[in-house]
Each structure stands twice: as structure tokens, then as C-alpha cells.
Length: 247
Image (cartoon, helix red, strand yellow):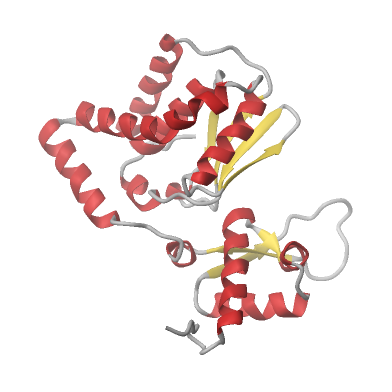
């Protein structure tokens, strides 16, 4: 089968466009110039692929934040994927998963739902526990956790923010499910705190409409005991009961 895009592009174009889209997934929001530098192709070629992604509704733009003194001229544009663009990287069986969780909550109760999502997150994190906890310090562990999450399809990375690090997940395979069941995000946050050995703060989630799931990891902090983890869980429960959103 010959690979073709909607515009009938040849296979090489399709592969390059996929690489551009993946870069938007993993590093977006990102400028066209940065995409060109990362992929080693001309800015004109990048712009052509970005124009197609924009036309197909798979990417969108926003003004890049200004740094330093405000200059003249139009601000640079940054590109990121839309929900449609993310979908090309997989949202498997979302509808049946949502239906199953609804059935579980309605017939077995909220605690059964929480037990299920906690077990699911444990299955995601626990196989990597030894490699993560072998690292010293929460930030170093966050780097190892990002590597592990990338291997599980979350396109994760870390960036230094002075007081600590931000763990960024550029893709979430369960984002559509988590939009209705934020307990998935809450269980994930609690698991991150436990394995990193420090309190963490969830700043943004794809499920809530943000472009990246972002978790702040302080450079130093106390290792949480079970009482602290339980306290965080109860706080998140109250947010869910009040209709609030996890921070």
C-alpha cells in the first residue's frame, strides 16, 4: 500500500510530515525555526508541512511569549497539535473504556473505581520502580520517570525550572477517558509523589484542555509517608466532589 496524505503527497512527504507532527507532540508548542533545526530540514519545507497540518485541523498556532524587550513586528508563532492531531498517535478503545468505568462506578461505587485506577497506574509505574528509585534526588528520579513514561507512550521529558523540575507528558493515551474520570490523573499524581519521594504538584493536564500534562517536582522535599499520600488523596476527592479540577 502506497502511503498518501489527504493532498496526495508522496511517501517521503508523508514520513517527513509525520516527523513534524511527532515533534509538535513531544515538544510543542514550538516554533517553525526550532522544528527545522531539530529535523535538519529547511524552514521552507517545515512551513509547507505545517501549512498542511493547519489546513487539516491537526495543528494550531499561538503567539510565542516575548523574551526581553518588546520589539517591533508581529510576534513569532508557536505550533502545537489539536485533539485531532493527537488522535493520529492513538486513543485506543476510548468509548468502551469510558462505558466500562461508568458501569463500574454505577454498580460497584466510587471506591471500586478508585481501586481500579490506582491498580492501573501501579501497573504503569511499578515495572520501572527499580530504575527510578536507584537515582538519588527527586529531580534525578523525575528524569528516569520521564524515560519510563516515554517507553509507555507518554512522550515525556523534564525541564529544569530552578527550584526543581517540570515533568512534561506531551501525549496521554487515556486523555479522553481522564476527561470524564479525573481519578486517573489523581492516582497518577499520587503515584508520582510516592515513587519520586517528594510532594509533587500537577499544574496542567491534557484531559483538562492543556497542551501538555505538567507536574512540578521540587528539587528538595520530604519523603511523603502514607499519611501524607492519603491526605493528598482525600483532598483530591474533595475537589472531585465539589466539581473542582486538580491542580
